[in-house]
View (cartoon, rainbow, N blue to C red):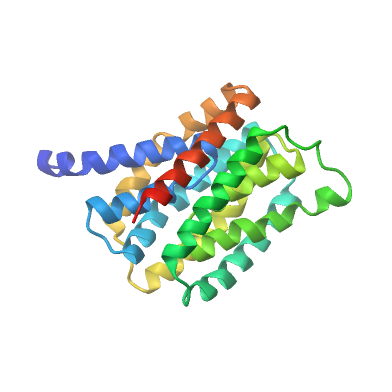
Length: 248
């Protein structure tokens, strides 16, 4: 590899590393950060930015989910049902999104994130049991709806709902959120690739950077006390909401 090529790839690798670390720490794909950056700094249109971000997200989500499962095992049946509901909802919402104003959707999503952040700042519900626990897969409707309508945000939506309304530990919720977002992202990547809306070299460089750092993010998530993780995640929701409201 030539020095000039390495230097040109270095910013992309570093960006991928930062996104992979955040993905591991918070159990998210990182697309909500990557997509506007790819559009703003690399001149990609919205579709190309979303497809390229998915190239990074799929391997990083898989690596993060594997690490979470080793440290914080979850019921595989619940994870599969959550993923199935989320994937089906993603497909349906994506069809619906074709005729909707994306600017209005993003404003509504930003407001929804602010409400979720407020909910996370309050005392979580007692641990779910019985009928309420059986309803956990329905969180896939909210997470999958976000993925389908906006192409991002499934983990940002699912995790606070699982913590606030079902009383799950923050790290368990993030593990389940990864199980939800992974198949949705993989299906989305196939769709964008078929349409030719993927920059594979850029996406691969971002993915390599992310894979080098995702484990560190997961390790830090499990080193912090659970209350600290909840507050950090609430801060992420607020920051994302403000950024989306400020964007034109």
